[in-house]
Length: 165
Image 1 (cartoon, rainbow, N blue to C red):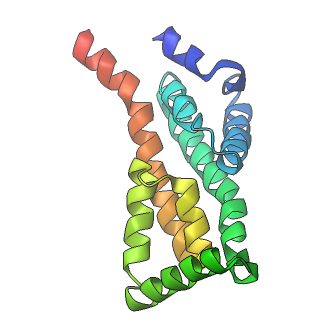
Image 2 (cartoon, rainbow, N blue to C red; image 1 turned 135 degrees about the vertical axis):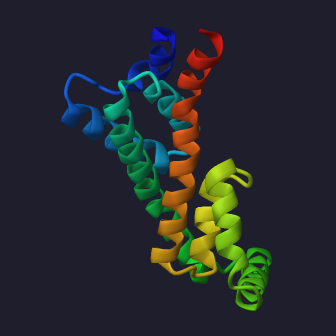
């Protein structure tokens, strides 16, 4: 399964020591959370090739960094009150009205997006900021959902190994 470890490419996890592995996973997660290019999934998949005790720490650090990177997108959403363009302003006001009528739906959509990336998670982070989802609730749900997603991806190499050996 060495080929899976190579999927991360130049942004690979430095697994020489526990601290470097977790630190590099946190840094990569932060970078890829702020810049939505979709490569975090490849890193999580590559982390599946790490030894078992290290794998868990790397996935948690990758997830924490990724969700911390979404702070930027959430913050962009909180700037929605500064939008002056009439068409966009109308859209934001409608979104806020829907969020006010159905306050629990937002966290459900956030959960689905965090796990399945449908709709794209960085857009949900912006929307959560626009409708003023409480930050602690948003980031707790985002962390839990992303942890499920990245853990499932990291488990995939072990599943393949189990099925084909």
